[in-house]
Amino acid sequence: MTPRTLFTIILKVFGLFFFRELITNTVDFIVSVSNLTKSGLAIDSNSMEFAISIYILPACIIILYVLIIYLLLFKTIKIMDILKLDHGFTQEIFSSTIQTPFILTISLIVLGGVILTTEVPTLFKNIFTYFQEKHLAAFSMIKFNYSYIIISSVKIIIALVLLGERKRIVSFLEKQRS
Image 1 (cartoon, rainbow, N blue to C red):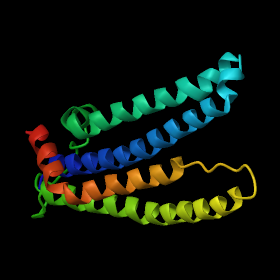
Image 2: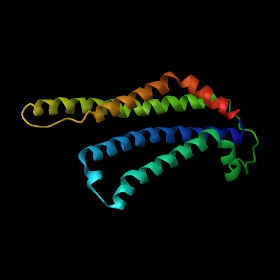
Image 3: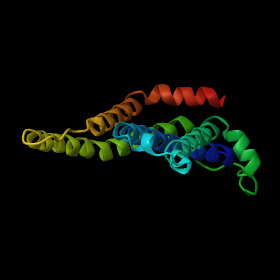
Image 4: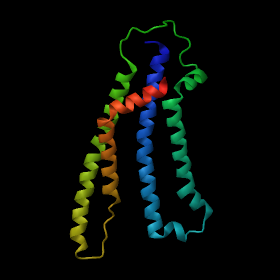
């Protein structure tokens, strides 16, 4: 394995972790904006700074995430050339037999596992909260927000897709590399 191959693997793994953060932040952003527009808080405010902080700033952050993910996953060679990551090594070849698809597969398994381990308890907590509030709703005008259960379910589905379709994802990333 050459230093160039090693840094390609590292940058792609960082790209996959940025992808995880993009999914999490985008879903949270959509829920927050929908809750604000339902409550009328964002509509009633005439302040331009408020509108910028609620809508435009998170959208710019999401666009930045997409750009970083694109660069890390599909333009790793250009990043390495710009940052000169593979220069200055005395050894031209590292003694390792680990292949890039193996590392990407392991990172997808870890990524899917991390999402599952964080979201399954969150889903159960949200379901438990739903039943508690449903019991309280019989006595008052409390209306439960289903979006948290839906968000946790979507994240779990994404994690299961990452785990189940990791071969296709790795072959897609390898096809883009060559």
